[in-house]
Length: 168
Image 1 (cartoon, one colour):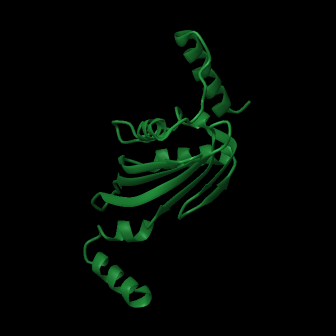
Image 2 (tube, one colour; image 1 turned 60 degrees about the vertical axis):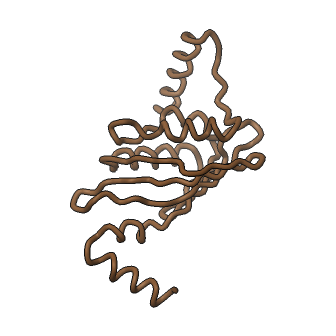
Image 3 (cartoon, helix red, strand yellow; image 1 turned 90 degrees about the horizontal axis):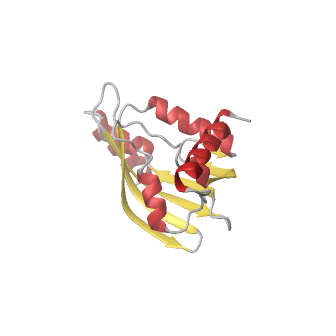
């Protein structure tokens, strides 16, 4: 049994004792997903996915600008890396929608770096749940470099000029 599974089993047992029955880890509507999503980001700025992990299917497929992940164990490792690297991270859900088993979340994520001012990434996530209400796929869309470079003095204008010249 992995450490993650032990942690989840311990949380499940604690919940069962407190609430007199098993909890059902199932995404049922967009409001529930928003609540779960925004509670990843704690007051101290460090993200914590432990409450959210039971809602992910063992066969989760995750993809974003940086990486592509298959399976819950690799997803858990990715969430740990992000948590360890994040000194201050704040997430705000701007818009959300649901169509059947597909959810869209538009978000603004502000993070801090050692030498530069805070950067806000503007993005969205498409989240798909299976028939059991578990997240089976998550695709995050954002412009990692553009949003970060916009906050670096002198470099921001040069980067945007380059992008416009080459791609715009």
